[in-house]
View (cartoon, rainbow, N blue to C red):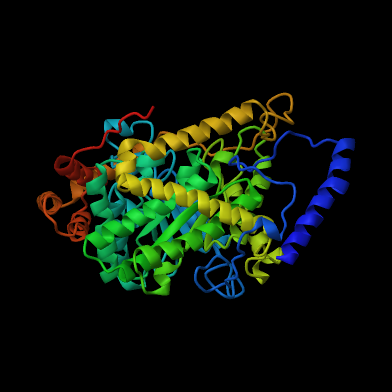
Length: 553
């Protein structure tokens, strides 16, 4: 107590005799200081800024300081570049280039028709085939996508949600045909449908049957693909939609709670499926706030799993996460500034203890990345991993009064949001009420107002603007030849398959959807019969309907 009072007196003396005279000579450059999320920041943090310093160590509950006692000393994080465009042949060539450049994992970006469960010949797919990712309609496309790439020698992340179970079934069948056993496969299926209703809006079916597809993959993989991460609960898109750091943390963890609850309600043992749940966070511009967010996420999830769900295994308590630098922060103006932004964001992710990382390319505000830009993004991670000393020490900001206070504040704010959703009955009920959608929309509006008032500076956009257009990098252009190629392959698949066998498989899928059976065996049979994503989704639309969102005001 005496020490606390002495520090308080020292702080008051410093403020009175040192800070205030200095500010009289040269005032602060603005009236208030906040994080990117709008959190007020004091000029100085001391031991008294932190109510109770977390004295835990890396590798032990609640994992605030990291999941592993040695951090990155044994091996650095996985360098995983998100890639996919055009035809499966084009993306396959990019994958081989990324692997040869030193990438250690693949991350598949699918085009909009695939994400929405539409085939290339669907009228709603016109103009979008292969444009924002790779076009995958059938097993033939998935076979070409991984041609010459041994699936037991890499880890693969697939960013797909509403049709995730179908795309995953295709991946499993490709492994079969390579002679690769399912237990040897390692990777992650995003499979996070709740964040689609909240932020990204790439949903197909209503929430509850969508959740059934998720829990069916939990159950199936626990029995047949034990090394596979069956879901990547994603805060990334929540942040891209405009949320604050605390909202990203709260909505992501509450989505995770919902998935665990549904899994348990489906009769699954929490300690069987929970260790294969992973998370996906945004690494945004505010360096210290992002580090604190990752630390708070680990601590909160450990307590949620142990105390709320009674999980007994430490692996069930551990929040493993992938990070991606903030796409929303990239600017079309002065695009080379994006290299600096990405490097700082990646640095925060590493200091926050990410298990894998994607760094955005400098040209992604203009188009899909070129090969040169994608390679530079990989090199950014390699410089951080091998030239900076980052991998030598675990949680170097542990004990920083500022970071510890931010960690506590983010946990407190996020916990209040989780409590509010609990009172609503859960995340699906909150989504149906429009609660997370409204909160994110308001946060995005508040931030944009700050930018337009120039209270928040974006270099090259509202300050330090150069006259004229400036020099822009060459960009990747996907022409309509992609759609033509995919339409041709789709026609060949339909002409060459056993149509009667395909029809039987789709009928069996319909029966499974109308029952309580696990959907994965029926999906695998449909995939083996070369049923398309669009055909399988059409069957499920017929049974479950298609979700239409009520506008949020």
